[in-house]
Length: 342
Image (cartoon, rainbow, N blue to C red; front, side, top):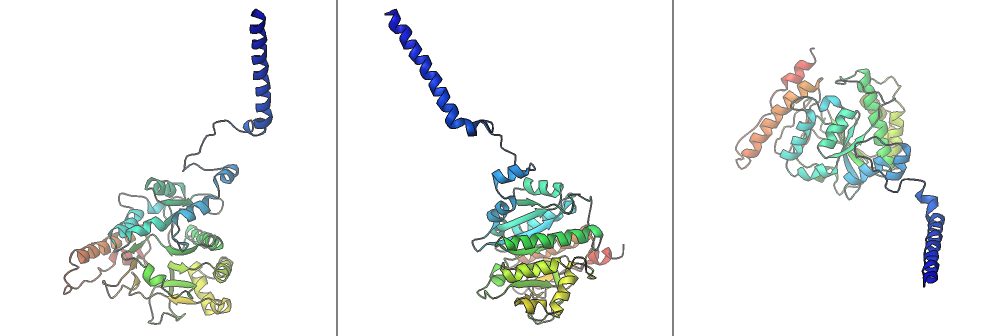
């Protein structure tokens, strides 16, 4: 009886050894290459190239999450200056979506592209769709990038390169500056049944003809459909970053007058300031206006002051919307006018 017990024990031990050997053969090649329990990175934590391979392309993930069914994405680029202060430009930008007509759901398709860590963390805190974009060598100049400063120009050209990458991935986009109030849903007017439009861009002062290249363009709001023609356009546009043009907007305007759009077969429409207005030229009709841009303005502080005044008029209009007899006038943009004097 004792012999049987010993024999049984030996068989059990031998079985355990054989099982351990088989486990090593089948699992060893993968199990010992990495920890059994892998550590997941926090969403806001920078990733290495290996992490990106494991997690997938971060830009593609961000675009796919924000994309509409037709692969359009609303894109805004921001920096630290737009998230500083008690009432920030980003706060005001988001207020527009909240207070606008049929605009709240558009936030689901808004991708905020942050060019520094501060604005990126603020975006993540607000639980929006966010993407971190590096500028040049990855340095992060502090403070506001004033119009036409070296830092401002670098950011504008890097933005152009980024938007070309979006097109290459098959996503069309509505680009918007964050100093623009979205008071109504622009999609019915921008994404109409006319599918032949490749490029639509806002104007500082509309000349009455939506097909005229004489309209002075404003690169703070434009819509681009992804195709080979527009990808080539942005490639040529970015190629002019070292030209004699003062900035990227002037370079694009020159390309229009030189016939580049016609050469590429791009159909472009210039947006009427009645609907897509700005401080350069106010909309004539508060009942029709879709966006209000704090253009013709130099500083973030001035933009905030005058945009808040616009928002106050918009709130009054909405409260009295049932009374068609009332008329409304936009306030004079005094802070922005005075911003050029300093």
